[in-house]
Image 1 (cartoon, helix red, strand yellow):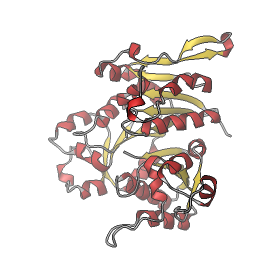
Image 2 (image 1 turned 30 degrees about the horizontal axis):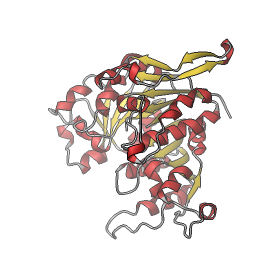
Image 3 (image 1 turned 180 degrees about the vertical axis):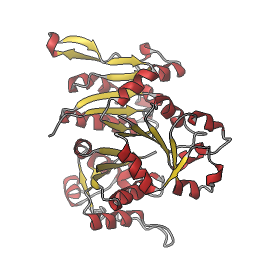
Image 4 (image 1 turned 180 degrees about the horizontal axis):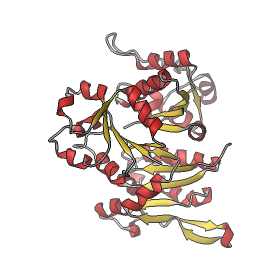
Length: 98
Length: 135
Length: 130
C-alpha cells in the first residue's frame, strides 16, 4: 500500500516537507512540485530532511525557478507531467501535504 | 455503491485564519451519508480545530467548533490526533474538546472518539487507508 | 486508471490551478480516465467566464473549458463554495434571486457529494491546493 506524497511548499516557509518525511514509509515516494522543488537543492538546509527517501521533482517547476538539474541532491530524479501521472499510478494513494 | 473504502480526512490547518477547516468539515459531514469507513486525522495546525473554548463573537465569524461534538451522531468515531503536533504547540488532550460516540452494540455506552497517537502510529493508520482527503 | 482531481485554489492566485490542469491533460494523454474534476474552496473561481486575463497571459478558464469539450470532462463546481464566492449558473440565479450568471462552458454546479462519490468511483484522488 505505497503512498505518493506531494509537497508543494518551500521547506523554508512551511512544515509540510518535514511532516511528509516523518510519515513516509519504506515503499512510499515523494514528489516535489511548485515551491516544494526548493527542497531538492544540494547544500540547502532542507536537504537533510530528504535523506534516505525516494524523492522526485517536477522538471517544469524546477526549470521555471531557474534551478539546474546539476544543483540537485544526488539520487533525486526529475520527472515531467507524464512521469507525475505514472507516479500516481504506481502508488496506491496520494497525500497532498497542502 | 460498490465496496466500502477506507476514507481518511487529513486536517492540517488552523480554523478561522482561512476557510479550509470549515469547508473540510462540510465535506466530512456530507461524506458521512455515503457509508464508507471514515476516519479523521488532526495534525500540525489542524489540532487547533479541536480546542475547547473557541469564541468567535469578536471576529464576526460562525463558531463551528460545536460541530465536532456532533460527529459521533454521524457515526464518525475514529478521530486520530497527532500527539507530537499537540505537544510542540504546548497543548495536551485536556485542551481539546471531549468528543464521544455512543456504541449501539454496547447499550449505547459512551466512548471516546479521540485517539491520541504518535507520529509512527499515525503513519501506520494513514498507510492502511484507501483514500486520503487533504485539507 | 480512473482519477478524480480536486482543485482548491483560484486561477492566477496560486500555481495549483495550473498544476491541476497540466496533470489532468497529461493523464488524458496517457489514456487514463478522468472521472471528475471537482473545484472546491477558492478553486470554484476557475469556473467564471467573466475573467479577462491580459493578452500575453494564459487563459486558465478557457483552457479548462476547451479540455472539457475535447475530452467530455465532468467539471463540477461545489455549490456551497460557489454560493459564497459568487459563481452562478441559471439554476442558482433562479433559486437565489441573482440578476446574472457567470459559469463558464463545461462547468456545472453541484453538491459536495460529487467529490465523495468521485473518490469512491475512482482509483485515485489527487488534490491540488495551497
